[in-house]
Length: 235
Image (cartoon, rainbow, N blue to C red; front, side, top):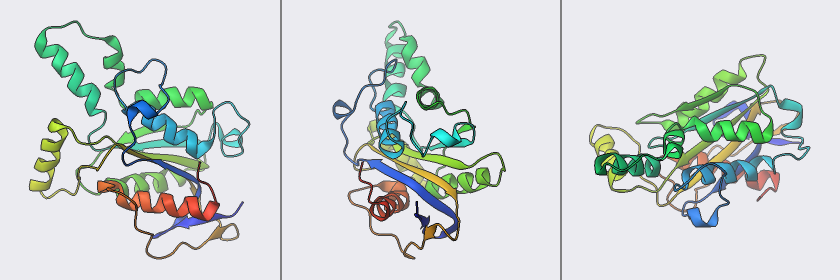
């Protein structure tokens, strides 16, 4: 399989890519067992499914790399829906839902995905007020320097801004940060590998413009859309 180089990252090649949104509604996404109320987790899971294929299948992207696939999830605001709901229950004196505690940990959905796909490589999450897309790609490149890692599943996810996250993004902007609210719920997934000159094609120096309002993930969305076109994959 010939895969495209990541534009501006000659050491990285894209084996598969997918995105959901901006604008995907939680009601339109398959529910994730054990997760409630928020679109964050269904959004992550569906985007990964479109990138890797259905779990349980003997998929060439996953099967040979169960122990050597790392996962990096990048988000600025995280699952703000769950955070708000838990806070509202706290201030109103209502009994906590233990599922909300589970969901408040961003890696919870990654744990669910590693079980579904049988992946046992390292899992990490990161956030940054500025340059979150760049930070995520830097993390992927660093992981691929490890001889025990063959590929990195990079997931970038952000929910549409609510009043709390809108205020947080305004504070970030006032402080000089580049984090910005999105036009709707958005997730992208890139399966990244170390570039092989004999099995890669050259991406354009400037990636195509993304559709919709992708906020601080605009560059990753553009890379994802280019990889989808180059691979002929529109899952």
